Length: 560
Image (tube, rainbow, N blue to C red):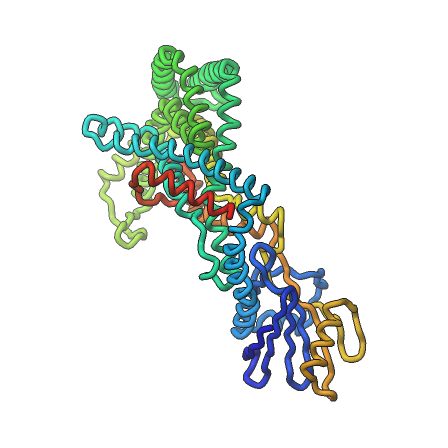
């Protein structure tokens, strides 16, 4: 039994905290006697946490809340409550230390136990297998890193990083996870962690890296094995889709725009020039892809092998780079027609300001009055008419290639979004939440058990608290109030939402609005969402045997 005094709410009221094994009792000795019954926080079971902003109510609130409810929510949280909750979470510190020392003393006596021998052998075998696999990945990562440092392969490395930009970023993230997961998994001495809440956070951080890597590898193996067993069907689908997209959309669309699209009367000469340029570029790129068709089969195999060896995120990033390279001719045509359209819009806007006698002041970002000469007005009139009449022809080609390139970019953004979700999902927290929700508290509340002479709900805890109060002595004239300290628990959405918010931290409604307005003025849409990925860590160098021992010891420590 540990007896300690903690100042609570103000200097007049004093809280006596009496802690027992399996049950704790708090009673407030002031004008009345308040007894709070609670379960002692234990690592791996439950603990208490104050979360005033995210705590969910236990019952549905009425449509019209009383005024005192709003006043209660507007009050600032009491600093003394944090001290009380911290003391509750540290209540089992001595028990944890004693249990750890007693476990170490009893280990020698359990060495002859059959269950202990089987468990120890299983963990050693698992540590050996996972350490060997991780060492194989470590040697591959170090080999590629060493190969890129040579001058002969440096230009290949630079060129591949520009062409396969997304693949290199995700490969670097996977390599850093392989290098650092045994360091994060090393057991933290529980004797130095006296607070159960801090111990829970440390445990989640320990298991976050390897769980993310394991789930990524499982998904990559599922996708990779599916591609390996269905390579021919996937290749035939790719060929049919590429043929249909090239002939049914690009060529047919360019020919359609050279005529009378949707009944619009376009400039025949300009439409013929733009259409022929588009058809020639499409034909040249299609001829090049005929010679590269034999590599499609190997390309599918490479995607499958990347998924099996490095996970789904690396193979998905490689797919983004392949799509970007395969549609390079569409991006080039879109860039060219965007350049023509934007210059035409800017010229028409400048000529319109000339007719109004206005001039753009770029320094002050405003329109100033300006007196133009007669010659300037004449030249402006001669240029304004053909530019305005040619605008519909340029606009339809610009709209067609903008829709095509936006569709391709949307597919790449969707894959990029999936990669970011895989990286950001806290798999360790989700798995622990499914097994034991009590490890994710969110605010505290009190369940009344006894008030005055009326017992609301009798249980063993109340009987024990009553006998304890009689033993220590309570004022006879004071009233007695007994309540249980309960916790709210986080939902799965409340666990995932903070992690997913970081993905979209670089995206805002203003940026989307600016991009949409930029399309009308001839600006290109961004090809990437700019989602946040795990930051790369410094490259780690150590001998292969030392790395294997680090992996082996970190896994073995989890089984102790």
